[in-house]
Amino acid sequence: MFTFDYITLATRVSNGIAIFRPLYWLFGKGMEGLLIAFNNQYFLALIVFTLLTRLVLFPINLRQQRTMAKTNRIQPKIQKIQKKYNVNAISDPKQRQKANQQMQQEMQELYSREGHNPMNMGCGPMAFQMVFLMGIIGIIYYPLEYILNLKITDYSEKIAQVIGFTATRGNNYLQLDIIRNIAKYKDVLIANNDSLGGIFTDSAIASIEQFKEGLNIFGIDMSVVPSIKGGPIIIIPILCLVTSLASSLMSTMLQKKTNPAMAQQSGQMMIMMLMMPLFSAWFSLQVPAAVGFYWIISNIIAVLQQLVMNKFFPPRKNIARQMVENTIERRAREKSLKKIKE
Image 1 (cartoon, rainbow, N blue to C red):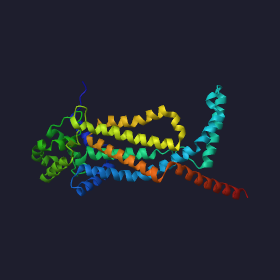
Image 2: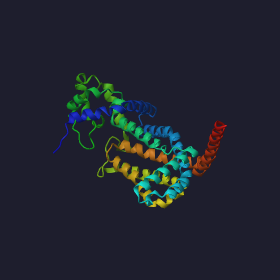
Image 3: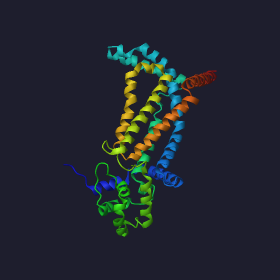
Image 4: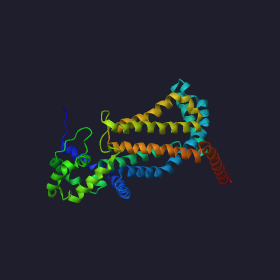
């Protein structure tokens, strides 16, 4: 049976992913300030933190909606070109290749006339959300280092030895284990403080104890990994599934408004709509409940954000605006070309 070297594992998981450490530090400072502002009320701090991250993403989401509006506006023209060449119906490989090249050339000319970049399909928000999620995971997994400013990285192996840390599923992060069991570990940590770099002073222990109290939200310890048999904490994955499904449903409804042709792809749309909610529920069963809590709040804010965008930046108006803007741009380009030829 394969087993982990708990000291090696403790070192790896206590240091985090090197490339994301600047992000951990930045998010940690933000969370530290919010905890001070909200008197160590972790759930309030995390809600506000999530709201701030969604506000940062709002301009990117708005740009994505406008990009989708432009894409949907020229979709009938793209379909007309595809129907004209009907590449898939050509059996001869050489003829099919030639027809495909002609079709691609005509589509490139269409993109040029419309001022549209097919490579810019709005993946930015998803990428940014994943980066933000990594930052959130960092400050949840490594709060001693990045929120409480206890520099334990260089001493993680020694700390693991001192407290007898053993990594298991649901308890494989050293810093979270210290927080959860601070009452059990504090005497041995204080007794070995000199050999641990003087990190665990009385004030540091008090800070950890206070932080642990803040992690209990409505009687649920946010540092624990949810499980089906874990009691009330199972509500976190359930809410992750429900809120993510609501967000996906809202997004799908808006996409159908901007592109009625999508309604004909109901089967594919249903699969895509269910994938993210199911993934979020599964993922929330693999990580501490605080990550799932962040995801729940993020989904709720995303739904509200979509409602606001639909109210003040409706899809049909976006399409009409894109048509006007593209007409102005095209006429300006034609005018410039005419001057060059003269």
